[in-house]
Image 1 (cartoon, rainbow, N blue to C red):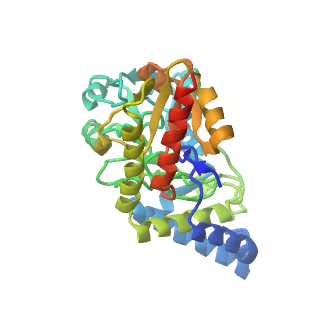
Image 2: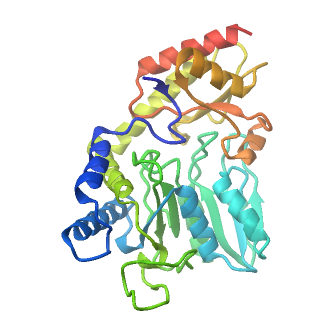
Image 3: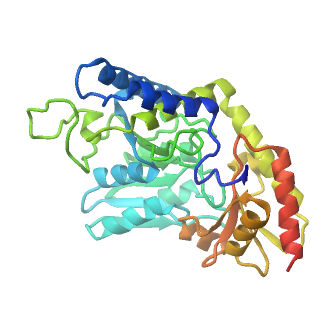
Length: 381
């Protein structure tokens, strides 16, 4: 087995009950949810309804019908952005976003959407006051990530949400890196639209995402089609979740989210975070005095998720990743991590950096072996 340290991309391995839930859904449920009244369709629909309820409760959201299942966080963010914004609207974002925000906004600019990017510190933090200063009369939305996938910095979402609420401006939060690692309270955070992946720290399988749409938000659908409801009407249903969920849902994937959330609830999200941060802190501490290794982002672990980016002076990040994989069977991630603005902020553009992101199933021995491997690579120069 490899030492897998790329959990910021997708978590691996999954809890055993996740594999079991997917297998059960494929072997025993099988029916298409909402399509027919036979027992397999009903059982499928029941499981999906229960998962909506679990997701809503997990993120403290009152209406499970506004929990939308998507194919990934990118899908969720595109739906949130393109379903809400119209020509003439102004959007505020930051220089620390993933391309799943940056690229849709770039596309929307061609359709008359105005975009302002607020500066971030070199450690990747957004100052709520800078967002406040960027407000205009036509500001419709602030879109911000909860935590950086490159630097690990946790943004003050609750404070930003409070500022937005006072001005009547909507807040879309990209929680791809925090959902399942940090407790998220949608109501307390004044979050209007919430997007996350299902396959990272929620322990679901790949091809799963979640979008939660606030009760005051009416998103336009980006696709129309079969919903299993009002099939005699050529128009797309206007009620949730059907309005935003055309086509057959990923039933095994949704079952995996349900099992993943159950695992988190039983294990304790704080226990999960504490373990992963402990591994990350051990890694930083073990290499902090190694000559030629440069770390990026904050060293304050109370403001950080378990993500660390670094470089070895005189060596390309891609070469480090290759050496770790081929010589030591350690899985990491090199490059720009789909977030070039983050690397410009950190001063690592255009080559990027190498990132390690421990998961709950990593051990302290894994980290010791990784530290030893990186020391050997650094000394080989």
